[in-house]
Structure formats: structure tokens, C-alpha cells
Image (cartoon, rainbow, N blue to C red; front, side, top):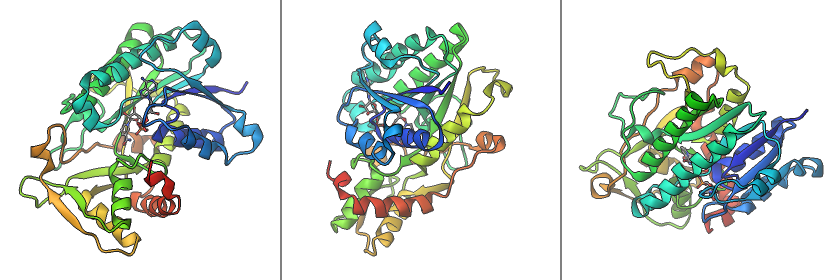
Length: 341
Ligand SMILES: NC(=O)c1ccc[n+]([C@@H]2O[C@H](COP(=O)([O-])OP(=O)(O)OC[C@H]3O[C@@H](n4cnc5c(N)ncnc54)[C@H](O)[C@@H]3O)[C@@H](O)[C@H]2O)c1
């Protein structure tokens, strides 16, 4: 019998790449659940699903629900039987979380509690995957790459609510035996990303000959850096984990049972280097200002970094971010409607 996956936040940026990956590599049915707020866009989902023949399009069902509310019997009946859950629905914009922290508690913590409570009552669930973030560890000093079970150190409400929800997943596995795992994903980029995010914003500013703001240290000498990863690589890592016998992995020295996996981009790239790469790909000069954003604005960290050795030892590695960046920049310039939403 073919499997069914429920993807929350299905109209969001990463989730629509996950939908694409599942349609192209499996015969699974997909139920996407989303409340369609400003960052959820059904056109995103439609564009990827439309690439497929009618028989595949029928494999995708769209359910409208806001996870701030419990899943009532009608919603559960509409979703139907589920074998896997990927929980991606979340408030994801850090600046918004600084202005509206309680919204993030509701969407990210209460929303996660609701989907977990639904999941624990399912009869056939094989795995629940929760998409967390490197930001739960806070800023990484040079030379430090956080491991999966390192301590939390949230520097903004977004990270704190992602860490809180992560701990709920751990508790549901320990309390109810819910089969689950957690991923820590780094800065993700790709086609159809919200233009408020750094990479599409720089593509647009360079195209329009505007000045790019590069976040830097207080002396304005060192630009912030991230390990960027393409959303397709993230989707690939997720499928790798669903196909892996996670129960065979022994607890590490912390003794924690619920498995966590860092999904790390291949290259650590500083934001100036990245903006220069985007300008070069467009054959343009980069106009930029280095700004001491991190000490002026709370909640913004100069460097995040994760240790990717666990996934590498299991046999999964990402593609080069630069190859994927070139593809994403060229695609975005051709499909420039995604720069003006
Ligand atoms: N983008 C990144 O770089 C990154 C990095 C690490 C982790 N993550 C995590 O991955 C997940 C997806 O990120 P994204 O960048 O695709 O985000 P996104 O903002 O593009 O998508 C989030 C989706 O969740 C939906 N949503 C939000 N609150 C909801 C609620 N209460 N009920 C139902 N739907 C709701 C939104 O409508 C949207 O479609 C998030 O959980 C995020 O924390 C993202």
C-alpha cells in the first residue's frame, strides 16, 4: 500500500521543495496543511505540482487549517490515514518574532503541541519529523560548530519557540513512544523564497542597482556568516532520514533517546562574499554598506554553525552551495514575479 505523508506548512518555502522531492522520487500521497498566512503561498505549491502529469497531481491534497487550534474530527477525517508527518509550519521571520513574540509562542509552540497530540493518537504513524533550526544554539564563536545535543541558547523569540517546540517533540517520544526525529537546518535558499530573505533580497537589489546592506561586526570589518544550503538538499536529507533505520542509532554520550540531525550546508559563506557572488553572476558591480546590525538590533547573531559529521558518517552529504546558488540566481531572474510578492 502506498504511503501518505502529512506536511504542515505545505505552502511555505522549504515544504514546497519537499513536495517536489516526494512527487519525483516516491509514489506517496501528500496532504499539505497550512493556514496560508503572508509567507504561505499556494501558487508556490501549484507551480511545482503543475510540472507533473495528472496522475501525480491527484496525489496532492491541500487542507486549510491554523494549528493554533486543535485538529477537530472533521479535519482529521479530511486528512485521512497518515504514515509520516513532516512538521514545518511555523512563524519563521526572526524580526517579526521580536515585534510579536506571543504570536510565535502560539504558532510554534502551541501549534506544535496540537500536531503532536494529533500524531500520538494515530495508529500507523512510522515517523514524525520536526524541522528545527541552528538558531536554537545561538551565536557560534569562531571554531565552534554545535553538535546535535548541545545546549540551547536562544537570542530571539523565534529561536526560543523553536527550541521549546523541539523539547515537546522529545517529551512526546519519551512519554508516549511517538516515533520521531528532529532536524537542525541551516540557512536555506532556493527557488520561490520570500523576497524578505537575504538571498532573494540581494538578487533584487543588485538587479536594480541598489545598495546592499551587509551585516557585520561592530568594527564593520567582518561580515556575518552562515552555512547556506539549498532547499532541495534539505528535502533530500529528509528522505534519507525517512529511509534510514533510526532505531539502530545508539544514544550519544548525553543519553538522549530522541534523535536529532544537523543538516548542514557544504560551504560556510560570509554575507559579503555571498553578495559579491550574486553580483558577479549578474555581471554587475556590487554596491554595499557594512552595517553593525548585531549590536544595534537585538536577536541577530554574527555567526551560526553546526557540526555535520553525524549525517556525513551515516552517508549523507549536501551539494556545493555555490553550484546551487548559480542555478537559483538565474532561475529567480527569469521568474522575477517571485521577487515582487
Ligand atoms: N528557511 C530557513 O532557512 C530555515 C532554517 C531552519 C529551520 N527552518 C524551519 O523550517 C520550517 C519551514 O521554514 P520556511 O522558511 O519554509 O518557512 P515559511 O515561512 O516559508 O513557511 C512556513 C509555513 O507555515 C505556515 N504556518 C505558519 N504558522 C501556521 C499555523 N499556525 N498553522 C498552519 N500553518 C502555519 C505558513 O503559512 C507558511 O506556509 C520552519 O519550521 C522553520 O522554522 C527554516
